[in-house]
Figure 1 (cartoon, rainbow, N blue to C red):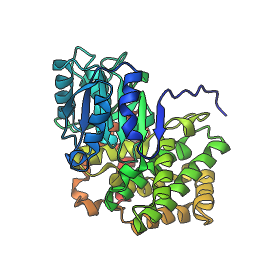
Figure 2 (figure 1 turned 120 degrees about the vertical axis):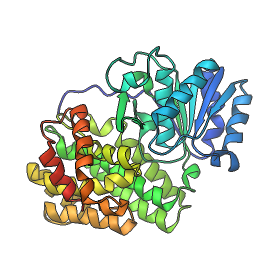
Figure 3 (figure 1 turned 180 degrees about the vertical axis):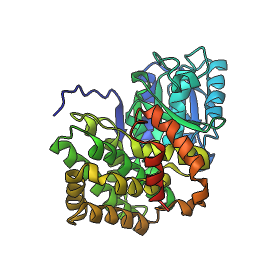
Length: 382
């Protein structure tokens, strides 16, 4: 096991009606004026927004709004949020929604405290040293952003989907009430399942140091996600399944499963970011296409771990059987496994590969994921 220091400063408040305590959480950190970020107006029509506002009012906390954040969040909306935050002199950002809203909120929080163009922070031109405090009420479990210090945003002008990471971006408090996730559509449930599995397998398969304990944690997360996804397809109101799905999602990317590991990379996310940036495909849906295609190319480079995956997760004997089982499960739950399901033709591969090569360089794995290799992987997805 590699030496490591594990520290996660986020307070995670998990359970029914916990959103009604958000005012107290904000007050505990001295918040006086909050920027509330969200996606659609559904949070207003379903009463969640009013509950939040009432909780803020109890503690004399003022607020301004920044709505309209979309899935695969955009840099232009981040810049809008920064302007609102600055012009209204807010001291805190409160995200209400899923990972896209929270990622945008983290970028807004960093950008509001930076004098230059916020995109500088994504391309490494400047480091994030401070940010407005971030809080969130999660309505969709998928990204794990509620308990990590990362965020991903798409620059729609350059077609680049890049990330920021900094300790200042850890949420101070994340509220996770599984009841708020019961209205998630089946499509986004299964896309979320693929996203959580992708977070889990990146290090599991690519790490040069991968302790058995960490592998067992990953396998537990994947099996929990698979089991609860099927339960939720059958009964979206199953609180027990919804709770376990949400907690597994958080565990997949809060740093725990990567503690003691080393030498890993994120090739599935690297490739998928191109699909999202170019075609605006849902992130999880893109991952369910990329994962089997990548695994078919990569499995010979770590045969023991792929054989372990096949046996521990699916109860089959060989790496290829395990890959086929995962792809079949994706097909069973209804998340895409082929690029053609997005209307993407083979003739578009050169455009995708060009974008992927930029991502590979950005991710620091350009020497491995050349044009030839990336083409071979994506050809597996047709």
